[in-house]
Image 1 (cartoon, rainbow over the protein chains, first blue to last red):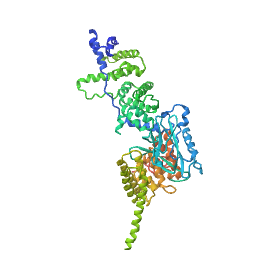
Image 2 (tube, rainbow over the protein chains, first blue to last red):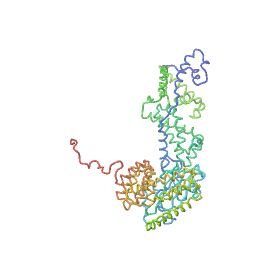
Image 3 (cartoon, helix red, strand yellow):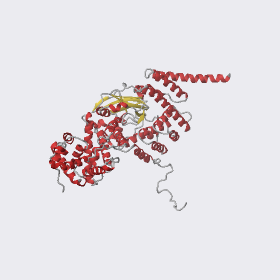
Image 4 (cartoon, each protein chain N blue to C red):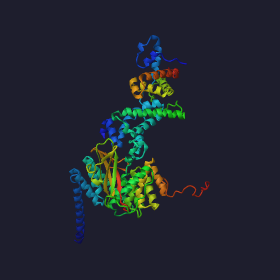
Length: 216
Length: 183
Length: 225
C-alpha cells in the first residue's frame, strides 16, 4: 500500500509552492510527484474530418421535421397549434390544406381530397398557400419568389406569436421557387420544403400548386 | 463567404435562430476540436469522444433557443458536452464495458527513443485516470491538461474550490498508487 | 426567284418572332437588372428562343439574381448555365421521341438535370410517361423527390413503379408529400421512398426489373454447368 503524498507536495502539484520552497527531505517526493503530473498528455486531439458533415446532416434532418421531439424550440404545450406548419408543397384547396397538416401532426393519414371542392378565396386558377417560418430572432420576414418577381417587399410575413411568422398568398397554379428574406438581407430556404440549387450558391424552396383535377 | 470566419458566435447563433440552418456549420467547425482533448481524456477513447462531441453539437443545435447568452456559446456547449460525458460514463458502467481500453490516444510516434519511458508513463497515467471517479478525473483533466485554475473549474462544475482541492488531493494519492511502477 | 420569294417570309417571320420576344424580355428586365445584365440576357434569350427553348426561366433567373444582390457577372453566368441545361433537356426529351416538346416539359427536364438526374434518366422518365401521365409532371415529381434527398436512382424507380402500377397522376403528384411525411416520422428520404415503392407494388429499389421474389424461382440444379 503506497502512502499518499505529503500535503506540501500536493500544494506543489497545485501550483501553490515551488520545488525550491519544499523542505529538503521532501524534494525527492516532490520530483516524483511532478513526474506524475508531467505525464499528463496535453497534445491537442483532432477528431475525424467527417464529424462536421455528420453533425450538419443530422442538424438538417432535425430542422426539417415538424413534430420531431429533438427540435422543440418551443417548450410549452400550448404552442402545439403554432408548431403546425402547413407544408406549402402540393397544397389542395382551402380547408383541406389545414386538415391535412393537422392530420400530419397527429400522425393520422391525410384525408383524400374531395372531388369538386373549390379553392377558397382564390380564383379557379390560383390557390391559397400559407407560408410559415419559425424565426424568433428576426425583426422582419418576407417571402419572395417567382410568383412576385423576387420582390422582397411584396409579401411580408406577420408575427403570429412565439417567434412564428406567417402569411397567406394566392398563388397561380404551377411550380414556384421561393425563399424567405429575414431582416431585409438574409435569404433563407424553407427548412421543410424541397430545396434546389439557385445557381448563386444558395438554395431555393419549391412549391407546386395545383387545382383539383388539373395537370401541371 | 470569406466573412463567415469573422462572424462572432453571437451573430451566428442569431442567424441560425432566424432560420439559417446552414450557418450552424460555422460553429461546428469552430468548436469541433476545442473540447476533443477533454472528452478523450474523460472517456478514455478518441472514438467514444468523437461520438460525444457529435451528440453535443447536435444537442446544442436542438436547444439553441435556450442559449441565454449567445456570446457565451462556447461555455454553454462545453456544459452540454460535459453532461454527455458523464452520461456516457454512467451508461458504460451499466453495460460494464472495459474501462481499460485507451485506444488511439497518443500522437507520440515522433518522439526519439530516449523518451520511451515518458511515453510509457503518459500511457500509464491515461489508464490510471480511468480508474478514478469521474469527478476526480475531471478536476485532474481540467487543471493539468486544460490548464484551468481552481476558480475556473469551480465556475464550470458548480463545486466549491475547497471541495475541488479535496477531490484533487485524493486523486493524486490514488494516481500515485496506480502508477507506482512508472514513477 | 420563287425560292427567294418563299424564303423571305420565313426569315421575316423568324425575325419578327425574335424581336417580339426581345421586346418582351426587355420589358420584363427593364429597371430590375443592370443594363449590362439586360444586354447579356437578351442575347442569351434570343439564342435560346431560336433553338425552341423556353425563355421565361432565363428571365426569372436574371430577376432573381438582381433581387438577391448577386454581382452582374455571376447573374449572367447563372443564366447562361441555365440556358445550357435547357438545351441538354431539350436533347434528352427529343431522344425519348418527343419531337417538339412544350416549354414545361423542357423546364421539367432542366429541373431534373439540376437535381442530379442524368440526361439518360430524363429520357427514360419521358419514355415511361405514357398517357394519362404528362411527362412534364413526371419530370417535376422526379426532380422534387431528388430535391427532398431521395437518391436519383431510387426516385426514378419510385416514379416508374407508381406509373406502371397504373396509379393516377394525382397519386404521382402526392409522392413528394408522402416522402416528407416519412421523413417527419424519422426515416431518411431513401428509406421513405423505399417504403412507398414497396407499397406501390412497383419494382423494389435496387433490383432489376426482372427480379423474382425468393420462393417463386425454380430451384436450379447446382451441379449442372
